[in-house]
Length: 599
Image 1 (spheres, helix red, strand yellow):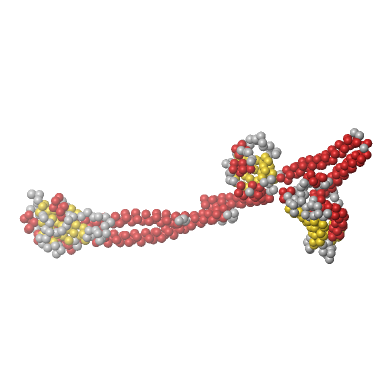
Image 2: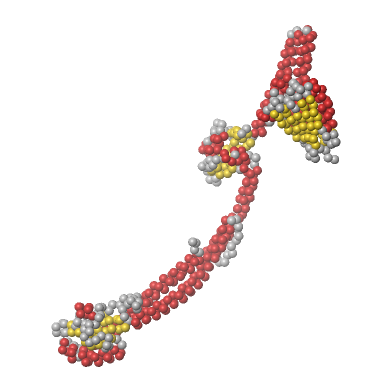
């Protein structure tokens, strides 16, 4: 249990006053008790000496003759001192007494003084026990004085004097009451003054304590200054500290908030480790990159999981390894995504290494772009090399004499023409994609009837459909209008490409279903065939340039692998969407959506 310093001060003051009063009261009571005891003792000694003087007894015979004179002296002394006086024989039996308390010849029962006088033949006074209570202490103060035979030295008689001890007890009790009352008054006064004094000290301290708690909670309030002493100077120093701390905390809070926002909204993952390699900070991107369950608390337990061979100690010493380049970092692959890791030790104000910062930069798109560029160059080279090789070989054959055989020459020239057409189409598609990529394609946008364009395209492809022996199913609501904003030529190009693929890749005597829908948000065209279908892994790459599901078959049918890429780009230029679903051996469904025109 906490005790306030105010109560501690009050308790110390009261304890000090109490100790002083107890010690001084004890000394006073002791002195009063001894004073009254000495007074009674002196009275008893004087009375005994007076009786001894009156008796003036030297022998046993004189004692018997002086008894009457002693009896008068006893009466006089009792009237003056009100003490009990007895004359005893040498064995302690009563010879003469001032009271009838004991009978003549009775042995006086005093265990304190009479036996000592008989034994030592000296005057004896009862020793007073200090601080004895009236219930447990002696009732009388006793004094016994021997009367000796001067000739033989034998004990003739004993003068035994008793005084009531109640006066000692009463005086001590009265003194104790006075001291107790004075102690209570002194305690009350001490409590009052100590409380005032403690309040003078503790109120500023309490205000400092309260302000310190508020300071810890972010409140920088000032404390009133009531004095110029040490506490006042402490308060003034605290107010100055609060002002400076408020200014500093404001600047730190601003910088901290700014830094947190930067780290939270960074596209790169940032992790910080202390000098022991323990993770102390990771922004949300790190959890997305590494996964919540794979982020460990130590550097050496995190990166080896992903095949990154780095040493925390060497990085802290800034020792570059052979596989770490300052400008490139280390490449790390996680679930088909690529991240470039950069490591940078950070130091404290003394220049000592405090930890390590790791920045994880997502370079997946860059890697894929580089890979696509490599594949694109390889594909273009391959697509051009094949027809060029064919043309070159046929040309060399003709030059070697085959030109003289008209039938063979015509056959060769037709093959060369076909390969030239393939190269022309390839170059044309590449130029088309180049214009789209460079945003150089200009669309002639106007309100067009999408249903009419679909029907015209079906009519144009009808001969190819019949040639392949396919069955065409066309569904559209003739009561609805299918007006949209678009470039008629480009829309026809999109539809021709989709229908051509459906016709080419459908098994002979297949079914091609074309459906046209419309709602308030979209005009939807769905082209479904019963062709060879597309495997799920290939479906994800169907819109990639030069990608073919069946490369040999596509090339034999004159495909360049760029058609669907061009279709996708053109659909998106019209703010539309295209989606393909397929099952191997079941067929493929292409869904194209455009926004309806609203005037």
